[in-house]
View 1: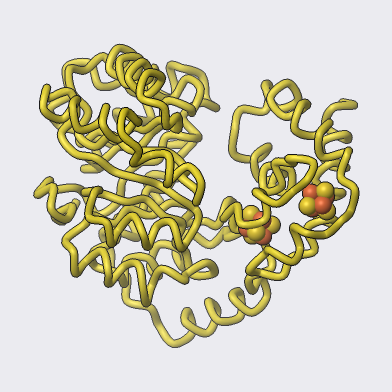
View 2 (view 1 turned 90 degrees about the horizontal axis):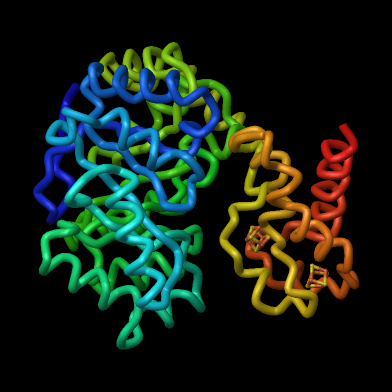
Length: 339
Ligand code: SF4
Ligand code: SF4
């Protein structure tokens, strides 16, 4: 598979990476097979997180004897130095490796970003780990446009991960060219908009138009890898008919789904995890379903205490009716909990 340079890291990465979330869903044996199959197809970038259940563990098992073939990205979300250090040690042990190519800060919103750069914080831990050779490069992930813009401009990070697909494409004219100008590697999450886009050909062909963006789709089956690799290695020029189809889908979905940017959350008087609850159905379809009820019960109980003040709606840049969406999320959860 064609390789491109991951910005200032100078790492040569395959045109697409492999996302770590769905690796939790198959049996361990099948997940290991899936990872090895992806490597055999020329995918050399694996992107995971300390917070993706068994994902790191399975990757560690699959990479035994093949570590040198792979550019490994993992991350953790805690911003205090001590916990971040512990998380890094755990990632190294679980992934069975001496070093991580890119260690990132996971899902950083506005407030977390301010804490991240304070003395003694996780960022200092990353710098120290870099000196010790435990990590090679530092990255950051966010769903929040403003935070990501700040992070790129700061030049504190070598690689970023941000949502990007043909429906949610606000990065196209701003963040992507900015990252390119500053020579920062741009990896993109949610190529299928969290399962809302189904047509792999349109999804991947669209993303391939951006030479410096490395999408990291998640795979659960061998056939999914085969399908995507075929598209990426083929002629991904979009025909007029395909562009028309994309336009229609964009109009249909519009911006009318939660982008998980988190702008609505800080002002909620009930401290409700608004995007988490709104997106419960998406999470159910992407993450291991066995743990679903236990994992979200607490957040759903909190969401049931919504006082409908609608402060969140006034903060949502996509003008979503968050209160109604919360009710739908809760309804979906309750229907699953009763099964
Ligand atoms: S409407 Fe509900 S979720 Fe929104 S800010 Fe008020 S209490 Fe929080
Ligand atoms: S409801 Fe709106 S503001 Fe809140 S996370 Fe979703 S898109 Fe962002």
